[in-house]
Image 1 (spheres, rainbow, N blue to C red):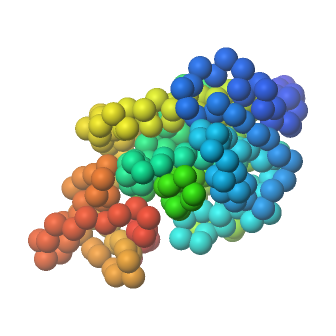
Image 2: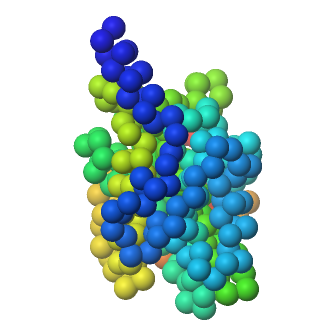
Length: 275
């Protein structure tokens, strides 16, 4: 009974995200220089894209308590009840020298996993290309979109992170979890998102500086997929084989059943259920 009361009290203070609390003392160089919080939007990614027309919008973070049309990779929906989890997007205006979209996808997933651990001490793992997991259940997903705008190339990183609740089993294809399921009380969403933004800012700086080997090593250290046999759909074609690496520029590296080494980019690839 006491634990239920503690969880309820902790969750109550998380009911509203506050941009000022997120920005204050964040200490980032790029990500989170400006933060906007909304009660409800169609999609935080869409709001970020609407803001891409502004020259000073680089590093803008958009958060919402709920989304009417939240989306994940490959047209999937992202399900989250209002006011319980973290739904946010980060806008990057990159001009004529964009970072590889593959590297941004890997860096974003890694930043979520590391940020979760910083804020809660929970060890989060990674499943290529964009899933953050605890105990094999999905905790968070990342959607990276790239477009050309007036100022050049722009990228939006969308994140859905289950803090207080996870979708019911019947609503999702794979098991899902939330932070509260692994803690004594619901963590403060503001502290969780601040930790993730700091990690994202750090990794984007390092990747822009060419530190792809460090990104690779940190990502692989949280991934249990290497040397597993998988079925993969990429670009409309099915592949079967063993994963031998994850390349920050080229994507999933697979040796197929014919001994051919294949590179599969994250943007158009998904891991299929085992037969």
